[in-house]
Amino acid sequence: MLKTQGIADLAIMLSAVTTTDRARAAIQRALSSTGLTRAQTLSETDVQRLLTALAAQGGVIEEIATQIAIHGIGDGSGLGIATRIPDPTDRSAA
Image (cartoon, rainbow, N blue to C red; front, side, top):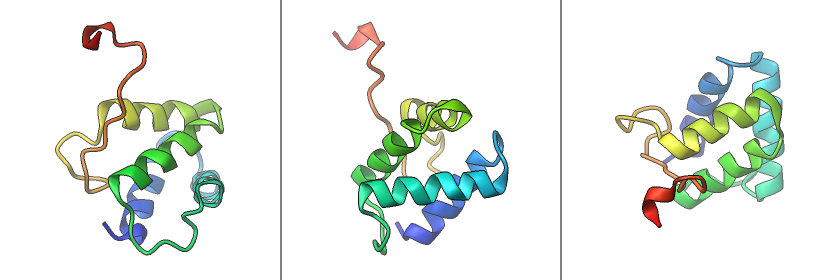
């Protein structure tokens, strides 16, 4: 997917729990820490890394990033892929 679309969708989701400026700043920090600042596209792995970096920032940003990572994007709208990171607390996979 194009990075610009994925980032725009993510910013919209994050702005539900914080200000637009804080959402943008959090995304920029996550892009920088994952080395994705200059990327033109995002793979599913890139999105997972980005969500992990966002979650590491704590607070409400962590909450929404974790929700997206665990539950995905639902019908595939939003970030354009059904990203799912296994929930480490889920014992049903054991």
